[in-house]
Length: 96
Image (cartoon, rainbow, N blue to C red; front, side, top):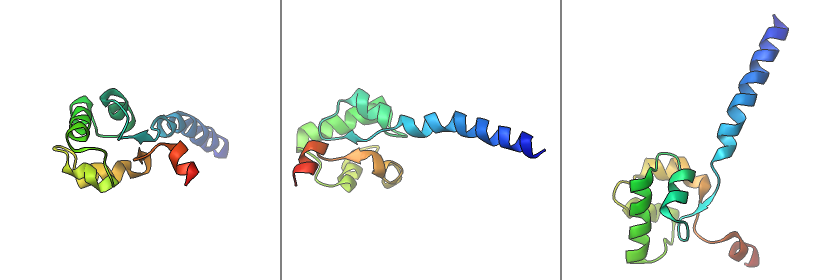
């Protein structure tokens, strides 16, 4: 029975790990709508396009919470994706 449980958990981890690793950080100040929708959970193409349109109209986002100013993006969506949202390139972050 222990062996069966071990096989089950190993199989489960093998199947779940790629799902966790799929989402990656995305710079919402430079990414296109397709990239944003692919990387952020709960953000489809229309919401991603709204993010890009807002950015074009108002300039770059200064804080992650500014995303809630975009119609259709609420605080919950921001919280779910907070770890995957970047506001500047990693090159700039390394220089500071």
